[in-house]
Length: 452
Ligand SMILES: Cc1cc2nc3c(=O)[nH]c(=O)nc-3n(C[C@H](O)[C@H](O)[C@H](O)COP(=O)(O)OP(=O)(O)OC[C@H]3O[C@@H](n4cnc5c(N)ncnc54)[C@H](O)[C@@H]3O)c2cc1C
Ligand code: FES
Ligand code: FES
Picture (tube, helix red, strand yellow):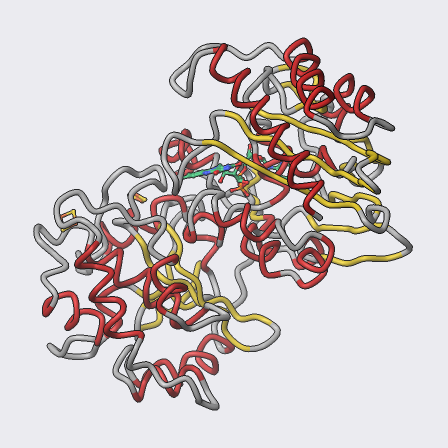
């Protein structure tokens, strides 16, 4: 039995846990505001807000319902556009979209309003820029974004900055109805989700649902995202340990991670979108083994290892060939760990995509660099999109170690890097272009290192 609260009503469903929430909403309810667009996490039309009981109360975030298995919301609060009001009234964002003519055909509008409400409910920062950033996973094909920005600004300007209780403030301001105050207690009374899994292993589902949604619909998957023992970020005895079920959002908000790598937050803002980052996990990124997996690139530069129940392997040896892993069927990746970098080291991560938001990289790379008086004391470089696997640039790193940075050294490092890689020409660029992209990134990393 899968039990949850959708808007203001308890549901007890006997369906398979792999059914996408979007399909449940559209086929089993009369809530038609949630739209089906791409079914690939790309358009944001299907955005809903999910509230999950956490350490400090219910943690709300906007997610794509097309990639969200229903079993994974058991015990949670699912909010659709219809749940933001109890009658015919409009929320401040809905009113403002109307006033500013920020909606034409309206297909994208419910998703946008849900992303904005997810920001109000879940974002650490409440500002116009945070609200605009929360729309990074919503595509509009007719209005354009200027009117949307005007509509968002006019609401955020009026939001009280001082309040004791976020939910109560949002109720008072008309963003959510009063029933939100009852949700925590009602969720605690729902029966536990107990099911014997007989299907795929799913963490965030943001890779596997893109290509296997129909198959997964009929399965009872194993949900790693529900396992607290896989969700931690800690530093102990000079090692940083990250549970495989940690999401990109958690990584981005982690004090441990931003304390070590202040620049990583900016890079993570360019990884997927708010809705995808709320679900996508570190473990899923590594196991999915895309040659341009952003997290794999970061962890390769940090010389990370991956741990399974009874063994630990260096990440640099984990990828054996295109989508081939040193991993047995049924094995679960439990944690990623890496040594705390030496004092004075700087991590620089870059990706170049065809568009600024919500895109996979043509080429991405990371460099962990320690420079003193222009001399490179330590360096490790990784790159994606330039070979069948995410890789370390061992020769380039070896060449740079001990050198004094100069134009000539940078140029030579770029030449060496081209001998280590074998990019293919595809939709993301020609082989020649990708070589140039990597070289430009190496130059940028070294320049960044010098500036520290
Ligand atoms: C719109 C969109 C944009 C995206 N943008 C980016 C981007 O910018 N950069 C990027 O790198 N990726 C991007 N992705 C890809 C995806 O979000 C990431 O790769 C994500 O990290 C996958 O994690 P997940 O938890 O969702 O994996 P899932 O889909 O849950 O799983 C992926 C695979 O790994 C297996 N698996 C998952 N966890 C484990 C584990 N702990 N042990 C063993 N097997 C496991 C699953 O069985 C499955 O085969 C994007 C995806 C979408 C839909
Ligand atoms: S339908 Fe496009 S993101 Fe879900
Ligand atoms: S209003 Fe038509 S897609 Fe945005």
